[in-house]
Image (cartoon, rainbow, N blue to C red; front, top):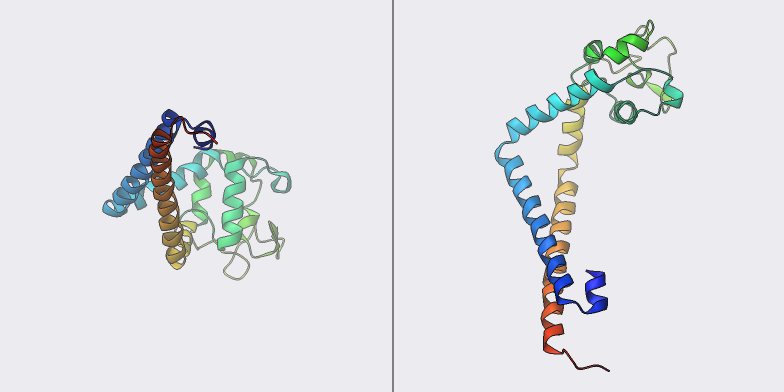
Length: 187
């Protein structure tokens, strides 16, 4: 868009406008499909989350963790005060967790924390209970609760992005038309 405007190129501006239009149509289509098939979307999301734990989640050296999936899960569990997809038993399905967990039953991120990834009760990973951990509260339910609580904000952001794209499409085609109208007239 920027290059097309600077160079006064109708081809670049048209390409930019059409590209934005395709993205906007894809976003509206994705939103419509998600709304129409919300039960299937929920099932697929839950299955995907379970797959990330069973395939990628590891427990090696939580303080210096560099695995993106494990970091994401640890952060989500810490922030949403939850454990696993449905509960702590989801980690039993993870080969990498089982290889490196030692005697732990839950990751430290499932525990009540004093600071990020630091359990308040040092025995929590080995002996979780209702007071020192969130081991019975699944993150899928916590995440959907968070989304429902913030749905107005999510809708406002989605509408704002869509309107911004519509404005950019409109302006790209207006500029393209004005370039044609004023071709040859230079200051």
